[in-house]
Length: 430
Ligand code: DOR
Ligand code: ZN
Picture 1 (cartoon, rainbow, N blue to C red):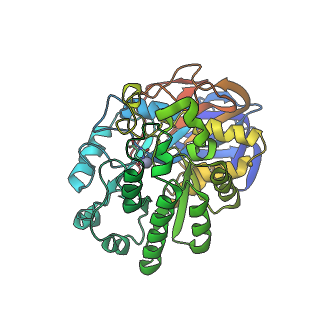
Picture 2: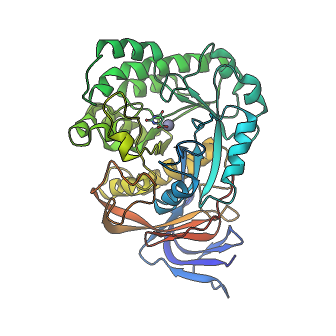
Picture 3: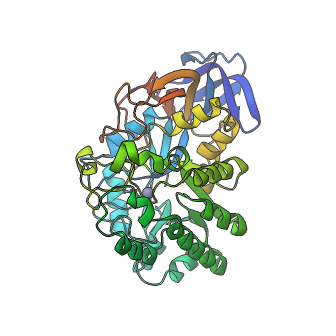
C-alpha cells in the first residue's frame, strides 16, 4: 500500500474549512497541514477542489444473495465508488432473507474480497426471530419492515423487538399494512403506476411512524426512521424526536415528486412512493434544520425488463449510489444547502448513528475514506454509462454541477476522474 498525499485542496473538517494538504499512511489519515512533504507518497494535486470524508450511505439493497441479475457486490460497490460513497450498509431483504446469524455470516463470507467500498449488513426482524437478533453481534443494525414492501413484512407483536433494541439502531420501514390493503381494494384494477402513490399514501406512512414512535416512547428504543417521505411524518417527528430517535431521507424524495410518473412511469415506482411538492419542501426543511439526520440512496436496483412489467407486476425501487453526492452538490451550487451541512448529513451523522467511530470525518487517525469533489464540474447523469448492473437512473440526462473526481477507500484510490478501478479494498465495518 503506497502512501497518498492530497495537495492544495480545501478540506471540510470538523473544525471548519482548511486550505491544507492531507497525508494518508497505511490506510489512515496521518497528517493535515500546509506544505506537507512526504517522500515516496503518490501526490495528487487538488488545487481548486474540495476534499471531504467519503459518503456513508446507511441504506442500500445490493441484491446478493438473490437477484444478482440486477446487482451484485462487485457492481454495486463500483457504483458506490463512482458516486463518492466509501461505506454502505446493506439491507437484509435477500434471497434467502438475512434473518439469522447463519445467513448473516454467510453473507459476510460472500462479500469477502469482492467489495470496492466498505460495508456492513443488517439483519431482518421478522417478529419470530428475536433469539437470532440477540445473537447477531455482526449486524450493523436491525431492519423492520412494518408493511409488505418486499414480501417480508414482520408479523406478530412488535413490542419484543422495540424492547430489545436499546443501543443498536432499529431501522424501520414505516408503512401501515392495513391502510395499504384497504387502499389496494379501493383502487383495484387501476394500471397507471401513478396509483402507487395513492395506494401507499402519506397516511399509510404517517400511521406507521406514529405507531413506531409510540413504541419507542414506551421502551426507549434506539430507533432510526428510514426514508421519511411526507410532511405528515416530518410534523410527527418534530413532536417526538429525542436523543434515541434519528431519521433519514432518500434522494428520490428530495429530488422527485409524483410529477415524475408522467415521463418515467414505473421506473419511479418505489416504497414509500413519491409524494407532492409540499412533502418535498417539508423534507428539505428537515434536512436543513437538523430534524432529519442523514440522506441515503435506498439504492434498490431492478432490471429494465422487470421495471417494464405492468403495474402490480413491476417491482418497486430505484438505483441511487451514483447520483447521491452529485445531486447534493448540485443543491449546494444552487444555494439550497451549505456544503458543511451536506458533509454532516452524508458523512459525520451516519457514522455517529451506526457507531462507525473512525469514519465520517477528516481527522488524524481516522480511516482514509476520502472524496475529492470538483464543484465546477458539470456532467449529465449517465453520459459515461453506469457502474450499477441495472444500467439506468431515474435522473438520466439531468445536468448536475458538482461531481466527485477522486474516491479513496482505506487509503486506496478506487475512482479517478469518473473511472472506477476494480480494486477490492473494501472491508466489513462490523
Ligand atoms: O422501493 C423499494 N425497494 N422499497 C423497499 O422497501 C425495498 C426496495 C427493494 O429492495 O427493491
Ligand atoms: Zn430500502
